[in-house]
Every structure is written in C-alpha cells, then in structure tokens.
Length: 300
Image (cartoon, rainbow, N blue to C red):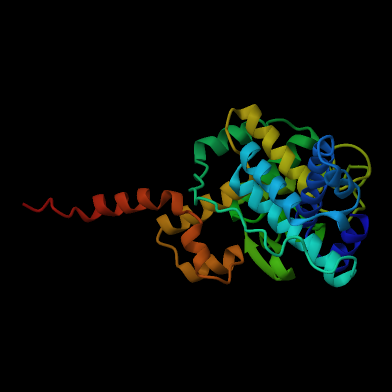
C-alpha cells in the first residue's frame, strides 16, 4: 500500500482518490483477516495480496453489499481494480488480476436530493463565532454552496488561488484542468474574515489555503469531508456532503434558465451527460413550476 500510494502520488492523483483507493485495499485485507478463522486461504491472502483470488474479492464484494450498499461495493470494486492492475502491469507481482472476471455490482440509480437553502442556513448557523475554526468552516461551506465545486477542488486550494480583488477562485479539476470561477459578496466576506484569522495562525506560511485548527498542518480534503458531516449532525441535517451543494448549484442554474454550456464550464464538465445527472432529483419540481407558469388547460 505504501508503494502503491507513492505511485499514485507520482501520477498526481488527487488526495481524495488516493484515500478511497487505499481504504478499499485495507478493508479487503481486514475482511480476509476476519474470514481467516474458518478459511486457510483467506489467512494467506490477508497478509499478501499476491494470494488474493477471484473468490476472495467476490466474497468481500457481497459482504459490502449486505453490510453497506451496492454503491459502496462499486466504489470498492473500482479501487481494487486499480490496485491489482498496478500489481499486475506495473510491478509484475502477479500474472493476472483477480478482478478480471469479477462483475461490477449493479447499482440502482438513486436521486440525490438537493440541499435546500434553509438546510444550508442551519449548517452555517453552527459556524457562528469569531474563533478560527468558525471562520474557516463558514468560508469552506460558502464556497461549496456558492460555486458548486467538487470536494477535492475546494480542499486543494492554495492561498494564491483566491483573488479578493476580482472575487474569483481558481479550481483544479479532474486531469489537473484549471478554471476560474466567481464568488458572491457573502462568500467574499467569509473568505476575507478567514484570511485575516489565517494570517495570525502558526502555520500561516504554508501555501495551502485551509489550515488545521491546531499545529502547523494543512486541512486535507478528507478533513473537510469529516467537518461537513460533523456540522451536519450539529445542525440536525442528514447527509451533508460537498456533492449535495454541487447538485443544488446545477438545479438552481437550470431553474433560473441558465445555459447548459455555461454550466458545464463553471462546474468543470466535458460530458453533456453530467448536466442531466446533476440536479436530476429536482427535475420534476422544475417541470411542475414550468407547467404552472404556462397555464396549459386553464384557458377556458
């Protein structure tokens, strides 16, 4: 895992991607270690990935579906695919990948509900205060809410990426592609307050925009992910994560009659399938609003 992580870092894979990949491998190892009590082959595979076979992965995948969800199992499947591909093609430790004939779990498409303004308000209310952590968390949440950025994009911001003179931020999306996005007055004010507090932090010289509450450390994207969950629980809002604001941004954009091409540029999409997917959970709501506005069947 250490060597694979080095390879992932050399390929400039995002930190969140590396975290999810490595988590999938460690969870497979733990699962096999638990099964080792009744299966000798599992004991060998738990300590050495070279010994992992198709049946081990399928058992792990089935357990993930039963204990978590098919969507989670699919996420683990993709991580394990990349790990064993590296072990096979790059390291030549195995002659073939045990993932070759393991089918991806079939996942039912579920609509991700957008996060409503009132819920965002409740989450932001937990950030009231003048302490460093309050100012930092409000600025982070407002960026997600105001720009619809990915978790890793906000999490990977550097100090130089924020331009308070032009009210813009530079995001680095998938494939390292950069795009400049504007933010509004409330987000700008939150960023200004945070940056003043950041100037007094012991780690102020770090290039990372977001700093940990204590110590000379940056706040990693996974730390932001945990912070959002914690703020959500404190606010009594279920399922708070960065992508819900991304869905919300797409929904509000379409609701206001915004151009799809412009939306793709702002959110860093290249496929036209993405605008249809994001905000789809509120598509019926937009259709009903259009129906009411048109007044069809109300003329007589």
